[in-house]
Length: 255
Ligand code: UDP
Image (cartoon, rainbow, N blue to C red; front, top):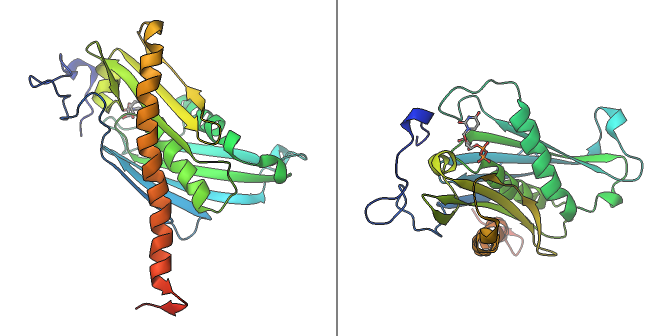
């Protein structure tokens, strides 16, 4: 586990050979593994490992809204529940959802809503349950990315996928995809998300200290990383259907 308590933050976030502490180059993503359709009891699901982050997303809907008073007569609603398991971080997290989880749930809702056709589903809800089992920086971005896949896996009509990544600044250098220690000990963290159907940024948060003139460089770097992750999302969706196709090849079930 790379999480450290504050007093233990490393003084330097780069090694002598110029690489980051986990051996990455400035623009290099942590290893990402994506899988869809892994939970039998959800309408759609996806699982992600992104560096040390491990996250499940399960989707239900369209279905009846509970509690009923939340239902909207003219459109469906999207509800996102981002939760971190109590064992997901170095210091035990209280099991009850805190302000941070509620804020992140709201942010992810805002990122995903633009790609759904909610106006076609009045009086119903789409629910996305996100469970972070292991957390190591960038969980809001990883959760948005895996939640979009789970929505697609549920067969819910979407304008496009949504992809998210953070860029930031550590020891004066701009980097992609901050790890937990880089997030805490670095100067700036800029999580962003993109909706691919219109290539618009649907999330841009900022935490830390940076020159606004650098924003273009940050966004350019983010866009390249987002494209890389988008390809992985598409491959994860394709591989589910390739597996099904192979299993039910021409109506003949392969043993
Ligand atoms: N974290 C933690 N305890 C908490 C919340 C977060 O240890 O109660 C860690 C976790 O690894 C998380 C990181 O701090 O990924 C950064 O948290 P932040 O709030 O910046 O959100 P994130 O980067 O995960 O989107």
